[in-house]
Length: 276
Length: 121
Image (cartoon, rainbow over all chains, first blue to last red; front, side):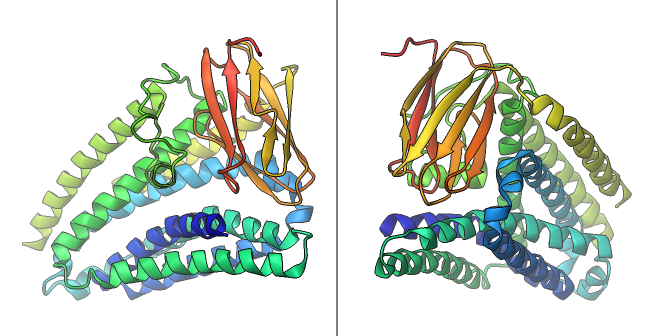
């Protein structure tokens, strides 16, 4: 029962943290439309997960087959691209937001950015949500007497709720942090998450034989932090932590992170110039 | 703004072209099949042995009345297996070593390893 609770806390925490960062950042930027699209993406994803969960019995080919594999790779790589785009956009435009230029900058949010927000929220929630729904569906399948089903079911739902509440409390408590600090922290978090998804996506491509690993297991830190521990597992799913990463994964992530660092600095400088 | 936008389109196109090539690559034909069963949220056997640098396919049958997510960080897969269904998981050629896999929905009990290059006891 406690295991069920903890699994669902973790699954839900991953998705709701992404949505939480997106929503609170957009709120800080005064972007109402963006917030609406994040919520829409979240809602559509939840509905999709529920529908897929209900139909799971008829969807074996999709859920266990190659289609899911391809979808997984998309859901790793596309958010990496979208998150990077969003962070750079924030660096360019966020600077003006605190001051008098707020309205102008809000008007600069273009339609395509809004759909990127929609897709980001959708993909983040869909990935974890599908697992959550199938897990709960599994609980409901247990053929033993009724009382043994309701217990775990409640534990599971309580787990999801706990995670959502935790995220809400976390972001409610950030309202007094100055906007520039807040944007910096949320940018770093979003880049770290994007790096994590890039790592996971790269790993998947190596497993599929599309990318060469160069060195299959470059080092082994599993004695220090193992993915099979609760915390390690959370780091693995959320930030792409791997105790035995292939060299290609280390390379792609370091190239990505240093590239982002340079791009961000340039974007911030460009932002400063336009703000003057 | 045109720079990043172009980059997005470029990356997305690249990604899509990669992905359309996937099914053909992922198909591991005439690779040896390694049977694996999931029962009472446990893998049977818990240790499978294969030879190094040869591709193989794990054929996992879920005998439980519960879906499971067959997952491995070492081998980078994450595949749902529905109750009373069987999935095929192609695995790339592996260097000698031990690689763990688990069931993400029951990580306490559903644990196993692939031993590469070590003879089975």
